[in-house]
Length: 128
Image (cartoon, rainbow, N blue to C red; front, side, top):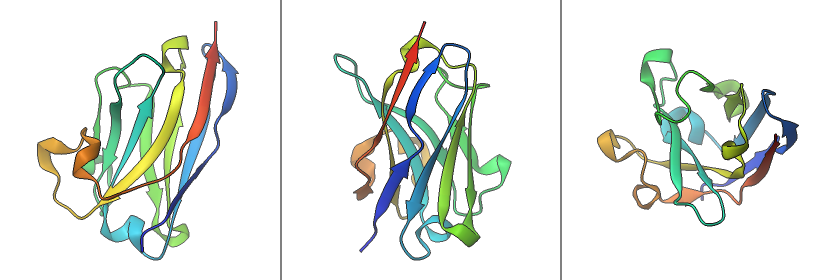
């Protein structure tokens, strides 16, 4: 059973930074494709970032809305996937959650339906 637990959310002013963590069970982070998603009230759910099991920089993908501001990474020794968020904007306010599934996901990585497992989420609020 794959379990995912997010943490690190909170309130921050525009321009600030936060680092979200997704703790995974077993060796999930080193064997599964991992994604970060966000959902804000009244807005469509958005796939934010994706990382392959290898975890190198070349194995990451980002939504255009966060490219250059967010960085996904992982520490397989800690079974944890991170989302470093910088230059935060009020429109980044959302519930953020991580998801996992067996690879490859290919061009479907931004779609939550493609993932079998997801966490409960952590709230991020960015004030102007």
